[in-house]
View 1 (cartoon, rainbow, N blue to C red):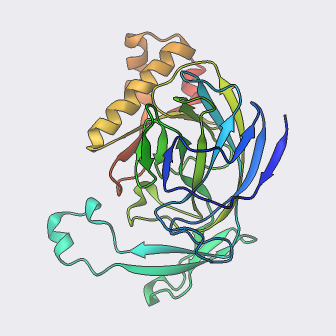
View 2 (cartoon, helix red, strand yellow):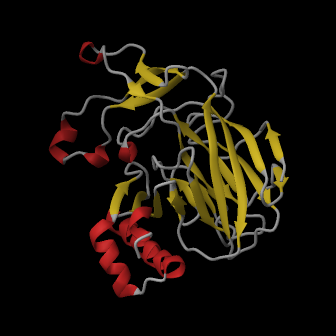
Length: 302
């Protein structure tokens, strides 16, 4: 198992079958740089146009269609001291009457204090002069190449992952993706210094990062992305309308409980019906994201 330090010179606005930027072995770790959602690098230089330019793709030896790529998110370190967001709230999360009085879009700069672990508006309105949010790095967009030669925009998401903007895709989480092409062809980027559920202003606090991830090839088949933290397991559905995303996530969790925890459909329904938690990922972009999450403590009791 090796650790690779990769410095990208090109980026991608789609996730698809492309020439690999680096070939790594199963079990290897990669440390690499990502630029922000608008294409600004660590020096705030425009390195690529948006949306969500990706670093990659990384070819993982041994990954074949039908396998699962497990990605351990080890470290997400902001590589500059500023980020940006938009306001006001997105039209997708407001009643129609509220949209009529909605102010124009405005871009705001945030200062990132890595030592203090905080983020704050550089020029806050008076009502927010004491508002300080925690620095909580996460990956907004990442995934593997989809099947049949598709190239999917980094503005959206699907079974291969993509722009899910789910807050638990953070250090300490392992993300699972269904492999559809040889080598998996993994991409990552769109790092957020902080973000609430839903990405309801159309951005997190967008900034550039140094990201460290490790790869493992699992000889098993999944349909939708999955994830695991120290405390929870979760499954992801990406679709619009929101209920379809929820259906995908719930079906994937039902399958997981059958495969790994020996629960038939009736037993799984008893557990899920009482302890499932649904989290909202992205509700701004073309496909919405829902996570179906269960605390591991309930599964240890089965």
